[in-house]
Length: 268
Image 1: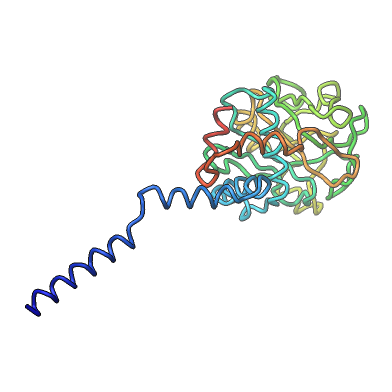
Image 2 (image 1 turned 60 degrees about the vertical axis):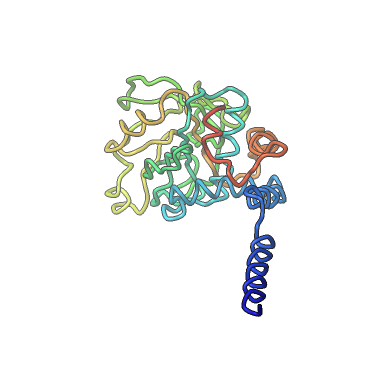
């Protein structure tokens, strides 16, 4: 009798433990969604940017995450404005806050979260010596221009095979085509020049690159991809740095933000 009673008690304890510990199969998912939704839109966008930044190992290459966030903001705004092709997933970032002795041009596949190239790039001789500190949209200024560009057509010019740039920021770089601002090869963009004079040589305002990588750069970014030049200027503003549209796109109501990735951008 006592033996049967003990067996009954053990079975009841087992059943009660199972019932208490059981939860619906979607419970963890609901908790995850709730947790994701509690993220503010700006926090989620920062998380989205950081995911690409970390996967592409951009920190190790010397890129500032704040600069990358600006570039991604512009890229998404350009996508939403239909200024980029549907299949455009390559962006180029140039950071003139860095010395010309540093590799301050990055070409990134944002959908596949991959750094394709990190290389040297020159600034205009009117912008400064080692550091670019002055920027202009004016012809004959020989200064670099900040902001967002679309890569245009490839042609053969005085510097060989070159890639035209179409400036998208009115009054900031909108004179790029008229000024002949292009991506081209230049012998003065080399480690040898840095060793000889302590910095790169300078252009007439073009983002010139080494002859060793010029064809790779042009072939990778041609076809109306985005190029963003960052620099320290209190005069620079851009409608493409408005985060509201990208935030609304990436985080619509009810979405499980923890599971959104760059494939969503590819559908734009």
